[in-house]
Length: 285
Length: 327
Image (cartoon, rainbow over all chains, first blue to last red; front, side, top):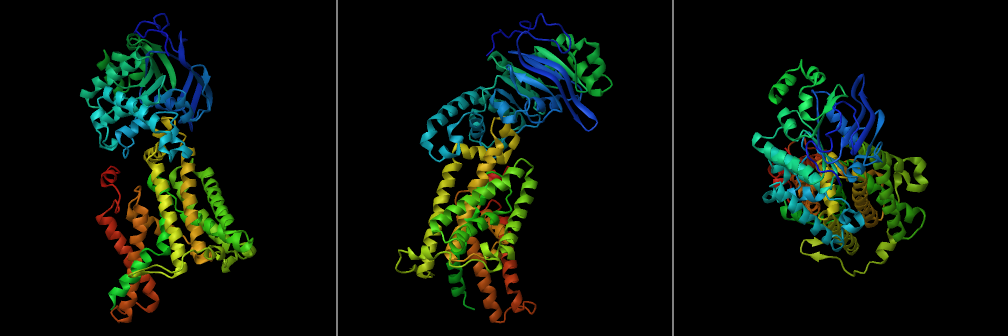
């Protein structure tokens, strides 16, 4: 749990605006994490610290290695080299489900709603340490009914917050794209994460829903969670992030509060040359 | 043409030994494929180890029938571990290929001449179920209109269908539990289940063991009911018939495998009887020589199954709303 009050200029006010910089209270520390595919080095992060209790945006041009970096941190891919720790616990080499159980939970760029499960079942699945998930006790509902009821209560609260409660008995496959994004985020909360990694949470979501999604993300921080998210939309990044790390060609080339990033010449040169970069900056200015 | 007697025979097979074994195989497959999404094309391999587990224990080593059933279960678990350990981490296609290969390897091994001392090789094993028929408490066979079976068959049917009901209840209890929810989540998207802290490999292995042991029970009852084991029975098409049974009844439904097995064997036997009668009444075209009757019956059964799948793709008990989400 965080011990800092998460205001935009709070804990990170005195941190210099430069890459690989140390933070006062890092929840995640990555060192020399490298991953290459054939001749292409997708990720080559020397040192990155993520502050507890704030929203950190990871941005970068297409192919900068953002998603690959997420996959490495959460055990969905293994690095060629490097180590990282979460809350001081070494995570290198751990399986993805073990990392999730430690409180580092991710969502996916391409939403993974479990289509042929109901919204409520999607939610309940997220709860950890369920007695009823053990084969030997599963057949005896008396052993897990009470816990299941508690889980359902918690799921109902979260669904209510995400305005999905009236959909709880629908199949997840029947939801709209934006609702699936909401469900995925809500489901991740059921795991009880301390740090949540959102991979392009706004991608493919209709603009009307973006505001509501943004509110949910800032709400996560206000509830004491740490958030890292990958995003292309500079408006979104400027709006809600407390700190921005810029990846280009797998390296962290800049860090700082959102305003400092826009003015950073390294970032501009990494983005410019691609249409996307020009657009992103025009939108952001 | 005597369609009444054809229908009566078909009805007898619909509830007969074959239907009961296939119901067990399909219940196991339902755990694998219907609930977990594991494409197991080697279910007959589990049936084989079940049958030979009983057969070898009793006929070769002279152990008791109960010990034989215990060996069948242990072999079922062993096969699941052997099959799953190297392949369950891979993509599902690799798993599917491995299952069909291992089942064939097992069949060729048990029927090979060097294995004759143990498995009877190509001659198989006999006298497997003397103990079983010795404890038959029934004094007369079932006789319910056209549904009549000799006393020994009635006894083995009673035990096999009881096993079918018990495993169906067990699977239904497990699948409505949070454990079953994890399996269904894995079927939908493994990575999502992983990202929520579920040990996907372990759950897939548990599913493979559970469905495999149920398949091994099918094999054990097969060996017991016929009192013999013969390697030639365990050909790959057994698995595909079991899939037909499962899809007909409705994958991921509770009663699907049972109803599927009953309908499949009714249809199969009816078509066979019909073709045979039509041939003796000289109603068939020239190219159906007497040797091609089996093939003709299979073809017609296949067409019947295709029609069922076209007009009712979710199977008899499947959920149409769920199926529509697949696309």
